[in-house]
Image (cartoon, rainbow, N blue to C red; front, top):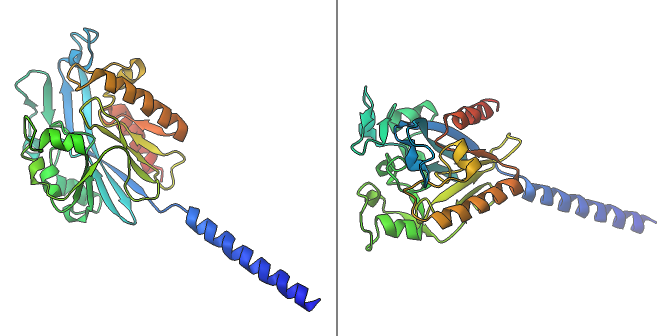
Length: 279
């Protein structure tokens, strides 16, 4: 009888330990998300955001957000706003006549407001390499730049037609060919969504304390109507690839029941701020 009781207790202890181990393995790390303003963009000729004349004569105000993702294994900065030369009293009308742009403050000051320094980042990634997403990239020289290989080749590779001097300052590079789980636990995943540029990316983040994960669009969409009607900007690298990425993005968003945040949308900026402030 004692022997049977001992065996029963031993099995119970082992079962408890296995259950504890399993629970520990499935427990997600604490992931925090911070949203910052990398610029203000007034689009004076909105028609460039469609393949046809849909938006002719219209204007629209964009924000230009960038993000900090804090994870126990390191910090990631996503996107880099407008260049710091645009931190000026009056907005700048760039030569094409399409955009009126301005940046509110420097990277250093904005990071300080969230309790970070420039040196605190192990990783740096951008949705793509257009000027309104690469602005302060040159400050990220101590971080590892995570980028699709084809995007890298298009802007700083040997075959690049127009090399980007800001991005050439980044020497630590991790080149991707598809999706990438940044920290290896499924909480922060770069999603390959080509079309806007050859190596365009979106970002999936499971923020601790939020009911739903956050899915940052990059420039797959620029504003709500663009998403609803699947309109592709006139300057996109590949229209068909963009439409295919939109389809894949929406399927992934539905699968994960994610809160989609359009990065240039002032409305979505406010939405995400409310979510983050509720934590």
